[in-house]
Length: 200
Ligand SMILES: Cc1cc2nc3c(=O)[nH]c(=O)nc-3n(C[C@H](O)[C@H](O)[C@H](O)COP(=O)(O)O)c2cc1C
Image 1 (tube, protein in one colour):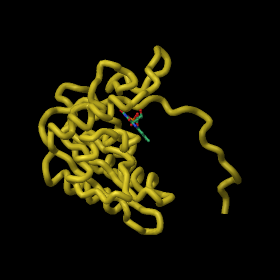
Image 2 (cartoon, protein in one colour; image 1 turned 135 degrees about the horizontal axis):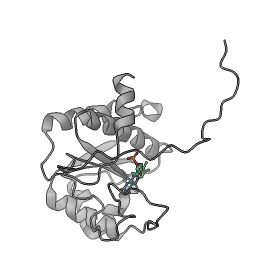
Image 3 (cartoon, helix red, strand yellow; image 1 turned 90 degrees about the vertical axis):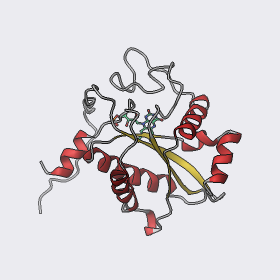
Image 4 (cartoon, helix red, strand yellow; image 1 turned 135 degrees about the vertical axis):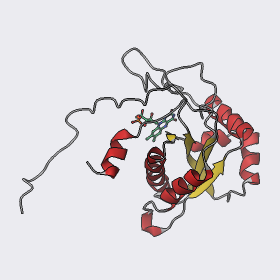
């Protein structure tokens, strides 16, 4: 298998981070991977707000947790046993899991493909992070972290245009020491539908 396939298969969501900040050179490469993602119409409309301020990330992560109402895990239905999410462990109070770097991706409110643009940039960045030994996790419903006067103040301080909204957060950090890299859940059967015989 080539490098790209190996990385795709190796990447897992990481929710337990070492406190150490990520290296600037690695961050630059991850951001470059995001900037080079496809975007609808080639508009390059996604804004990447990189926050490495521990206190700000903690406050926004806690606001987000307070605004999140996930379906809680059961014996048979759960997100991850190895790296529990807020749906798996109600004791988790920070929806950003104390990641040292949190990238909020903003895109225009009135553009049909804003979510897709952010998701594609995020996947590029998660794959780049994996190749650099950095763990990542996609956090959906980005706007919930700002649904509080403190979050609104951050948007003003960061100069986020008012016609943009936070689609998601990408968490980045070195995996916590001693943790085994998570294993992928088995892939569900029957999701590929083949049409035609694949002949010339
Ligand atoms: C659209 C989307 C939203 C997600 N939101 C969250 C989230 O809010 N919190 C979280 O811990 N993980 C979140 N995840 C990560 C998924 O839980 C994770 O990708 C899934 O469990 C599969 O695990 P893997 O990434 O290790 O393959 C999200 C993933 C996607 C694609």
